[in-house]
Image (cartoon, one colour):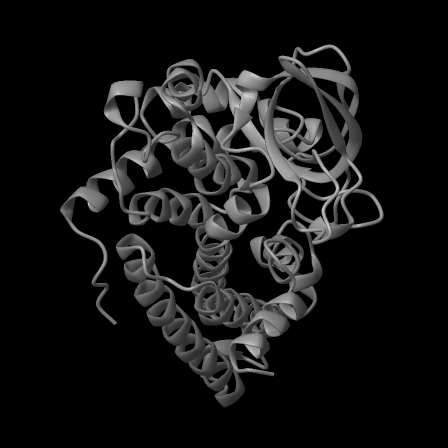
Length: 381
C-alpha cells in the first residue's frame, strides 16, 4: 500500500543514508563483530552528515525536524542493510527526547551540539540487576549535598553503554509512599570519578550492538546536571515511552519486510525435486500470509506515527502497536527461516541473524506481557 507519511525530503535522506552505510558501515561489520562494538568514529561520521541530530534544533547543529518520520527513514535503511545499530537508534529515538524536552538553555548549549555531531553518544540507564525495568523497585540512590548529588548503584542491559559519554540515569532521590515517586533524571558524564562500565554483555543476537553493565560509586553529579525537576522522572519516562515503543515497532516492521524480500529471492533460486521452491503452494501461502501481516502492521504503525507527531498518541495505543508489530515480526521471521530449511540455521545467511536479532523486540521497550497489561487496563480490566 502507498505510504502517506513520506515525501521527497525523506527520499533524499534515504539515499544519503543508504550511500553512507554502504561506504562507512557495511565494510566495517567484520571488524565490529570481532570487537563486539561499533567504532566510535562511525558515530562521528554519522553526525557529520546529520544523521544523529535530525530532531535537534538547527541552532545547536541539528536538523530541526519535528516529525519522527525522519528518524524512521534512517532506521529503515539501517535495517534494510542488515545492520545492528540499536545503540544509534537509542541515542536518536529514546534518549534525545529527554534532552530536547527537559534541558534548560544552559544545558542545551552544553550538550546538544555534541549529541548532534556524534562527539558524545548517549544512553539511558533504567534497568537494574534483580529488578529489570521495575522502576518501583529501583535501588540506585542519589543523595543531595548542597550543589551536587552523590550517586550510588548499578545498572544493567544498557544499550550503547560502552560508547556513551552522556548517560541519563534514573535514580531515587527520596522515599515516597508511592514508589513511582521520588525518582530523578541525572546526566552522568563518563569521565566523572566513581563511574565505570562493566562487561560488554554477550547476547544471542545484536552481536556488535554493545549492551553494558554500569556502576556508580559515590559519583558526584552536579545539580546542574539534573534533567527537569527533582522527583519527576516517572512522569518524564512515561511521556516518552510512546516514541520508544514506536521505535521498536518500526524496527520490527522493517526487519519483517526485509525477511520476506530475502526469502522471496531464495525460494525463486532454490531448486527442490527439480522445481523452484517458489512453485510449491506452501511457499506461496506462507509468504502471502506474511506479506499481509506486514502490510497490516505497517498501516497500524504509520497511523500511530501521525498521531505521535500530532502529540495525541496515547500510551495504550503505543502499547498496542508495539505488541502487534513485535509479535508479527517473530512469526514472520520464523516462517521465513523455515523456508530456507537447513540453510536458515546457518549464521552466514541474513535470515539466521534476523532470527536471533528479532527476539529482543518482544522484550525491550516493555515486554509483550507488559504491553498486554497496559492494554487490559485501558479496557477497564
